[in-house]
Image 1 (spheres, helix red, strand yellow):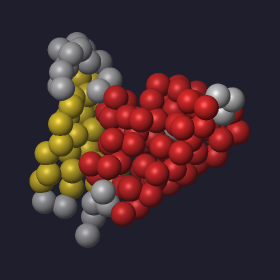
Image 2 (image 1 turned 30 degrees about the horizontal axis):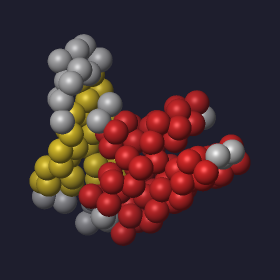
Image 3 (image 1 turned 120 degrees about the vertical axis):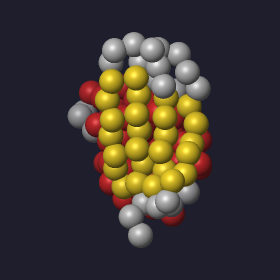
Length: 121
């Protein structure tokens, strides 16, 4: 079974929600600006990127809050591998802005987009 996440973001203000369609999960954040993108990845790809991100975060963590982000990313990786999309999103939200910044800086677009979607960005 191919399980995937589709993240569609179109800038501006909106709520993020989950819509299940067949074997995939679509996360939409519909905004009103012109920055548009669409990304589809399997949960395995997301988990793989989160595993790599966790290593980068672990090397850079200097505060208790950053340590918590490392744990959240590791738990999100586990949730993705188990196919638990709701827990994945909850944990990526806990991972927060610092995790997003590191994912962006080290060039992990799959993790970056998943965290952005969880944060409602």
